[in-house]
Image 1 (cartoon, rainbow, N blue to C red):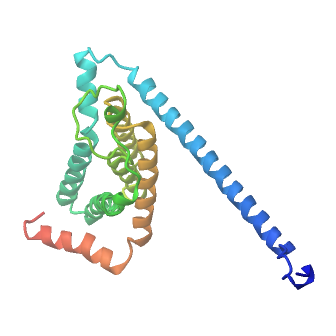
Image 2: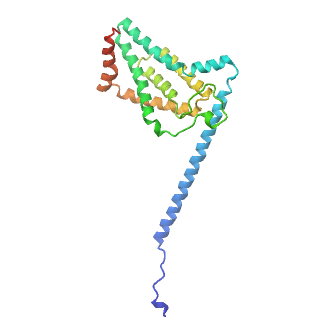
Image 3: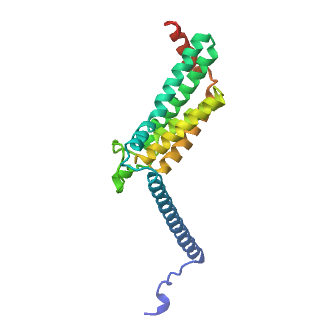
Length: 239
């Protein structure tokens, strides 16, 4: 037959070609960014591992005194803060100054608020095994093989420090709290519980959570639940 009777051969329009080129460029950009993120992530992980080994090189695992010190400071800050708040409360009872009671309650509420948020959103964080679970690191202290990231102890330490800065406002007390908090975070890395990055992120989160609580601490329901109710309840026991 006559070729003029055949339907015209479909041709690709220039707009279709432009769309295809844009799609290819977009895919290449996404692939490039993914590669950059993967390289950056691997670099940060390598820094974290190097920091872990560097801190662990500070002590001799065969030294009973050094191992005892790591065991002691890995949790001492928590007991110190609990004892400090009890002493602050009893001092308020002795001097009959409710301001110290309020300070103790504000510090305790800040810490509990920060840990509550951490527990509520913990499932959103990526799962990171403990160092001993994925490397040849031998932990000085036995620990459950749960998630390493971020550190709940670092959140506690940072929240306690921020609360001490904002509520009691005693520079000597703040310095002691800061010192014991740093010692706890270092001890838990040296013990093989965490990577340094777990502590850094945990401290950042604890700071943010504590500042959020400070921002809302004047609200009526915070005052009623965290301050007035505990004080009235303690009065039943003459405390």
